[in-house]
Amino acid sequence: MSGFTGGESPPPTTPPSSPVQQRVVRVARLGVGLITAGAAVGVCAALVAASSQNQPDAVPATGPEALAAGASQEPVTLAFGGNVRFSGAVGTALNDDPSQVLRGVAPVLESADLAVVSLGTAVTDGGSPVPKPDVFRAPATVFTALRSAGVDAASMANGHGMDYGVEGLRDSLQAASDLLFPVIGIGTDADAAYRPFVRTVNGQRIAILAATHVADSNLAYGGAATADRPGLASATRTDRLVTAVREARGTADTVVVFLHWEAEQPHCPTDDQADLAQLLARAGADVIVGSHVRGLQGGGYDGSAYVDFGLGNLALSPVSSPEAADSGVLTVTVRGRDVVGSQWHPAVIVDGLPTLRQGQAAEEELRRKDSYRGCTGLTARPAPVGADPAGSEQVVPAGVVVAPEPN
Image (cartoon, rainbow, N blue to C red):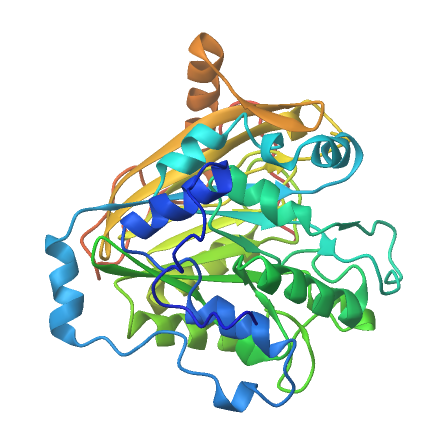
């Protein structure tokens, strides 16, 4: 555990010459902890038996005065990227130089106050593969690759976070702990898996939870965490996820939920996606983003909450289709519960790695991504905090085929 328990960032022992050290110093100057109790305790719980009962609260209590004060603070910019999987050409790039894997989108990730991506692999060299077609694992240098690009935390609540079972889970948590890198949506029990990553930026407490739709469909290898079983935070156990959101809402200025969907169809969300996003917004989530869809989906507002149904993949090899190569980074700017702006930064995956689009290509992708809002039920502008969204008729963008409703 290295004696690190959250709070202020530990001072560097050498001058900050490397990109990683520079990143730590930049975060420290923001007055932000390198890793929060929510992530640090969740990681360490995997390694110290019986410690879960003695863990501190994920988010220290915040009184109404402190929460109200967030409205007067400087805004906070959050960045989100989709799935990063270190196989094929991405794995080769990792072996060559971890610091360069995500260099093509690093300018956007580094410019945000907090950046989160989905890490679609077990981080282990042991364990046994689970009985499913595609399993992936990678060395601990994946965390160096993420941090070098400006990523602050990674969700492992996805279809590959437990590809090497419980042993692989423990190895993943150990690797994250050794490098002081926060991972969310995974843990030695449900409390740890649903515990948010929490950091204070510009005087505002940001809580980020993660969950996946696919954990329960893979119970053969213990995918979903329970009170006495390691695993992933399941989004299909909506009562547990809603409880986690409400608990975070009571102590954080901004609550974010990072989801991994089961459906992979572009470009319109399924009813399950839409229903869950609405449920989480009503429970108190301010930002809800999702990945796993092989292609992009639309984003917009559900009342005052910002929702993006599909970020696509961020780094992936091989890429199965041109649509699967569409990528990007979403930035959302918040001030407490108010979402004051959002921007999609379009990218394209080439040889497994993302590169930001430029010029006319970027403008075309922005228009296309914006058009996908038509079948989401989301609006282009927010309603006041606490207001119900206005109903809207479903409009399907050109080129999108929507399956008919069953009789």
